[in-house]
Length: 381
Image 1 (cartoon, one colour):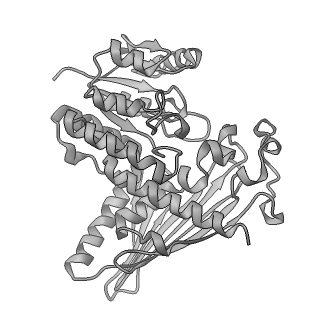
Image 2 (tube, rainbow, N blue to C red):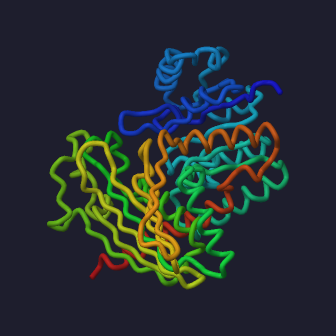
Image 3 (spheres, rainbow, N blue to C red):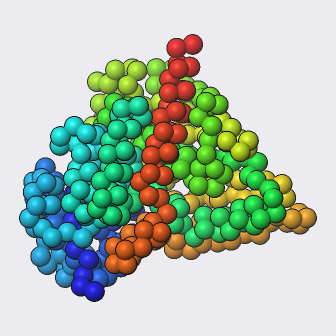
């Protein structure tokens, strides 16, 4: 078939890259091939022009941007371009709402455009978000548009291997007993002032640890939201003082109750009676995070070590063996795999290639909000 015609909504880091992470969709689409970028929509057209110029300078990338145009509004791009798919990479407060102008993914789906949406799905509380999610689902049923959400770890080869072990576990009549997620963020090189304000980012669990919350659901099943308990270390506490926040962040201008919690510890039961825990922190300097994810079951222990890095390990002890097997995944690129799946789904119309459809991502959104609220409820004590 002809090249898949793609538009970008948002010219920021998640679509075009930044100095604090290797994630971006543009460079992955350049690798996949058979794709033409026909539009970039951003209210800041200067930033969009700069992003386009930088990608054109990238090796072997010029041809896919040859006919790319810049738009100041996504609605204008949708109307003027014949788009097969779009990547929605906007701040969470700029989409996921029935309010006019904040409903861009809904407009895309209504137009029959296949849509990739970065997490989190919105900023509004779940009880205010449910109408939007239902409306989008109804429009998706009408248009048959593919809607994929960017929980890239579902595509990571190490997680694929973990799912294989869990499938074997289920075939033996066993279930996951426990998951334990640890996510420590490096903060000193942060370049996004809005990230430090819970009102504009959603907070660390909704905006960042959401990936591990989703992984917990993907590997162990649905959490019982009524069992969630959480505690925070807040910015106003002595142990919450951070000494290397960049001067451009100006956290002193944010009200205490809206400052990003420094650490969150949460635990819960799954609906099938296993237990889960999450520890999220903002304490490291530089740009390198430290992350790990453990799964325990009868006769099985899996430890996923540093899945954000290009080389990560999965350490497995299973059966009666007291030694562990170490699976090493070099040059693993979950972002590339999820983008490949989205483009192939567009080409073939095969919705099953999408490992995190919208309706499933809504459950992760509800989960992260439940953890955030559990921590805030305990802040008053």
